[in-house]
Length: 295
Image 1: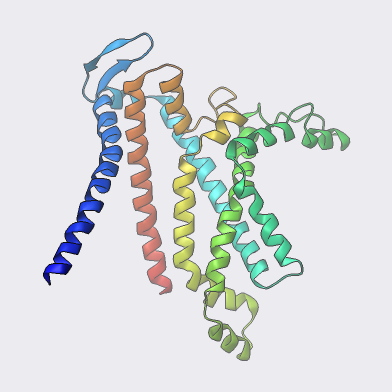
Image 2 (image 1 turned 180 degrees about the vertical axis):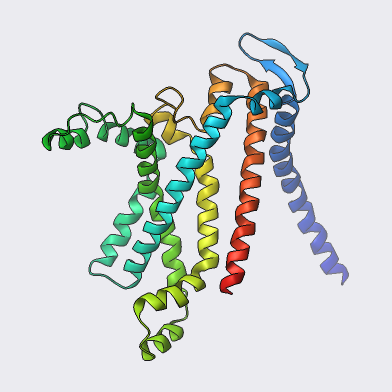
């Protein structure tokens, strides 16, 4: 390396390292501080001095029926909504890829929900499923069913949350799967058509296996994002009726911003992190085995 090249490298490092260290500090300090607080009892209201309690916060969380209930609720909403998002998103991507009439208009229309704020979507859904003023219940009354308590009956409230999640985030899956379809080599499909292979077999034996890596990535992204859902639940049901639709993130929010129990909230956050990491590791291990089977 010449002296001029070495000098240029030193100049690059002089600009890069301060920014890197600053970002690292901003990222790590809250994480380390929250981990420290998770081993303490600390309240803002009424203000109480921090007191080290070891793993007591974590023990209380693991013994809490509310924690396990919120984890089950989070898993049900996330898994069911992601399955529906993937199936519908893949189907829409296939339809758009084959240039159905009006596909240009559909591409723009299908992507609109993804660009809306989740809070706005939840407010719209809350009005749509309103027991007296909502158009869905207007339809129910028109067909003689009567008012349906969509947001005050636990199973129906869960179903509404899943519907809202599917409606908003299916376009994300459609967009990525459509990009994957458009990147596939067309020569393979042309050869399959020459051999008179049916459309279903082309999908089963060619399209799906070739799109499996991107499918794994898309589902993984949506699962991780789904586990963090809070805004839609907070606005639409508030975790109710009771705590039947309370997710892990909403549980942590209630502990931190309603009870001001900062120590417990920090412990909940790290417990949630462990749950997501374990779930993600299991998913990737199973996905890798499935990918190898089709490789």
